Length: 478
Image 1 (cartoon, rainbow, N blue to C red):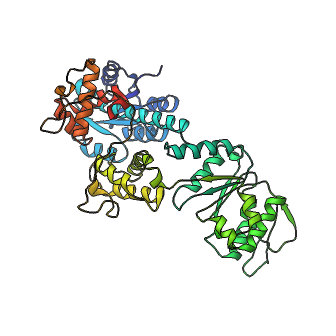
Image 2: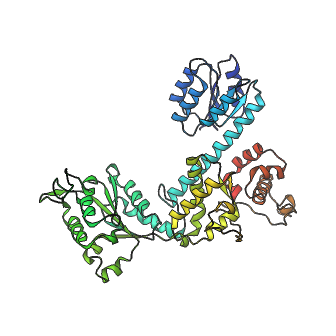
């Protein structure tokens, strides 16, 4: 069984590395200790390491060298740097380069343990979140796609059933619902994933240019054709060609596409030679193709050729229960991308997000959360940090908690400062763990998820609260 975490301790001063390694082993970590920077680089290259403690000022291989190697070899590894007196500037530079924090000499065992424990708590939370995402992906969705609402579960089940076939698929859905993501997911789940996934927007270019992009052209076929050009069908040979917005394809090209689907051959513009292609077609549109057929804007024979399997994506307003999952993923994605500290959303902000109609669907939600992450000064996104079209100034939003796993709940009145203490348990018989869990959960709810304030209300340190959150896992948020 894997230990809580594996640490690497690097310090060229005799006794320091062993002393720190022993201190970490006493709190359950497996440790490597070395006085050599070169040996540290070897360990990083040959072993899985979750945490590194390294002195900054060392001969030959510096602490910065070890920091850079750790981040390159183990991107999720947390690095704590150790600086001597007067080395604060160097420690700050190390934090800018990716170190989690720093400690100053002379070293104290309790300080080392406290700093390491905080990083281990963060690691445990990340591992639980990754495991939850893995379970959600396996049970409800596909890699990269968030959705556990009943409608999305039906969609994703269908996608899994048809992914590893050669059937032509038509994906229907409003703009921004994730049609291309579904097409990519089908490609990744198919044997064709070893070959290219090629996408083209049929509404983004003129008829002449679209024909050239799809089928290619020969040198001299038209003014400006100075060399032979391979089209998307040839690039996608063996793989998948995604025809986005196929409802906007001109009728003349629809006829040529129909011929390709029937013969599995293409002819470049300016050529009379047929080229065999093995391409799986996935098409998508936000238009009503049946109406387009009735009005003569879309060929009926092509319509029936491309809708062997139809996947209909629901708009986001019809699956608002998926919003919290998406918000959590987008917040973490953009916080990491932009180097911001936002990590969570208050219940009122979540109420605003779940209550919005989202005419732009998932794309609009994603853009809104990027904006929120960028303008939030702290680690919690509130209503005031959301775009004004989603949360107008002065509007009232009912708090909404994110979905979570079932856990014990206990009735009782709230105390004047807004959270329920032990008196909320009444006469219900519970274990000590259950009582502790309820206190932690209610304190977090009363403080809108602010762990520093919740810890103060409970009369414990923030580090202790993190450790207990790691102990109870997802039950804390239920």
